Image 1 (cartoon, rainbow, N blue to C red):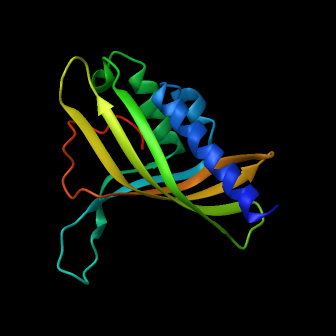
Image 2: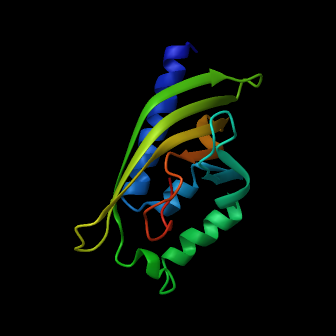
Length: 166
């Protein structure tokens, strides 16, 4: 497979994933994840130039398949109040860069994202931007997300909750 074909497959995976999340297809989204998935979003720090600006000790979340599955199930219950009513979201994915790994069935991908979120009748909206560093693995002929590191641009998130997925 050429690099161009691989880039197209990865882009199509990301666009399908965004569509599922934006349309609240969370159960179908879970099917895009490997059983050993790691899904992490460390806290962004404001530091002097040359110092690390990503926390190695604090995160907004650090999830695995089981915890993601529990989050999705909870959102479908009366206890999922953070998403009742549902947020209206649009995920914009761009600047997709693909890199082969030493394994034929895995690929590293980096992408930029912009998440637009509105809730209820409020005029306040959330904008969250950043970069995702992903590892995709091909299983049974389909790409699945094996690892995602989400690095947001903001050091302080202005959103009321993170009950959504990036």
